[in-house]
Image 1: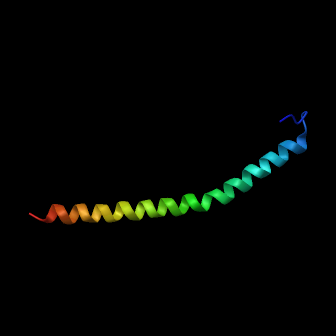
Image 2: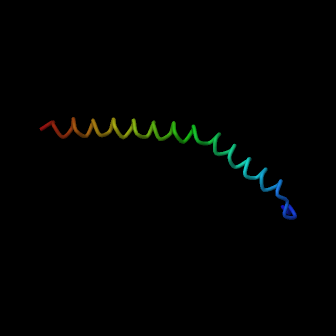
Image 3: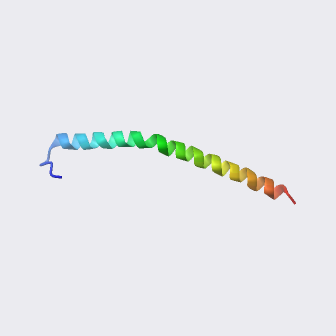
Length: 53
């Protein structure tokens, strides 16, 4: 797309990037928390299995 050097187009693009990031960020946070919970559970299972002789 050709903006002909429009500063307004740059500002709109930056605004769109910021909004998209703010929309995307909560999903990343939830996914990270879920992954940490899964890893913690696997870690506890590994410890329990290691203690079984």
